[in-house]
Image: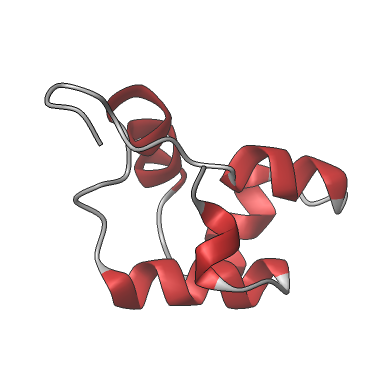
Length: 68
């Protein structure tokens, strides 16, 4: 990753493909929808691994699948 480049998230893409709203995803992963929108705006390089694991579990995928 280059300096200043943000690590992009595939969370919204995967959720859409699976027919899961971001609200439902947030509830299932026990996070706020604000966190998901923050990742969209600022990237997810600082997201905690445990949180990403809950998101991946709620989407039925691996943590690696969440990153571009």
